[in-house]
Length: 397
Image 1 (tube, rainbow, N blue to C red):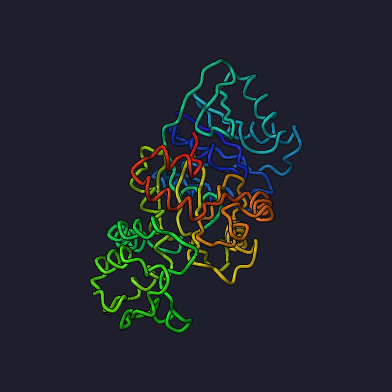
Image 2 (cartoon, rainbow, N blue to C red; image 1 turned 90 degrees about the vertical axis):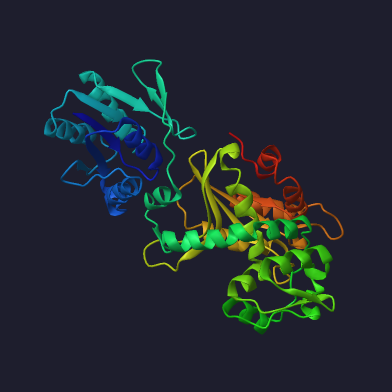
């Protein structure tokens, strides 16, 4: 029987990958009192279950409580108790997690027994380094966004069917979104007042008039693309026809989310990314659910793109970053990569395409990368070139 021992901490991915790589028959988790208060063991087991590895406490998973995580004596007493509980001729011990005393105490105890000890550098969480030799093994398993988030205690609010339906609609609209992105400007695509915008996003309306098309839709090529996508007619320099709430949302700004989702979705293999999703909703505890526009996994990290299209005239100066920080600050994991794709001209010094120094400083503080409307245009033109997409979006290996 193969037993895998893991030290629980806030960073669960190295342990999750260890389970998928070593495929133990029995799982032993060392959980400190601090991690117990954060419910880490239960969250970790939930993440494993979402990836098809079912471990149940008291059946094939055991949680050994460690009262004092900074005491070498207590650490060794805890791992000794677990070791005696499960006699086996094969133990694999992952000393990556926990506090330093937890790692040191566990290492010393199992080294003296001659058991297999592995460690990973968080920069490469799928590279398992054997501490008794120069051997290294690479885990090929790729965890989903759901596994990533469940391990940190977040819940999904949308069902898989709801996500699939939204992404199927987006797939049919991607060519239209690309055409819009190719002409991206710091103006709203459609000029609606507040009431019209609300109606367009929530119910079927009578459609558009020439006055509505004074924004981005003044371009004939864009009107043609939108007309074809939503079965509208061109008349008097505008578009006519009925539009439902999905068309209303797309035209009032969600086209940018559809563009980035489709761009990444179709190049997953070439970009070495996976599990690309549009509009997932997550929450932690009793908090209000947050919708993340575009999310994907890369280098075993969660990447999230917040999309803000149109002029965003109400966002003064660096305020364009506030929503990103508000949404992303809930993630206590350090390995979340944040991107903001915006067509706002407020990111530039007036009359130029030079980014405002104050905004660059704020972006650095928030650890958020900006993608501006000239770059969005370039991405639309280079949508068939993974190398250019990788360069602009910083998807380095």
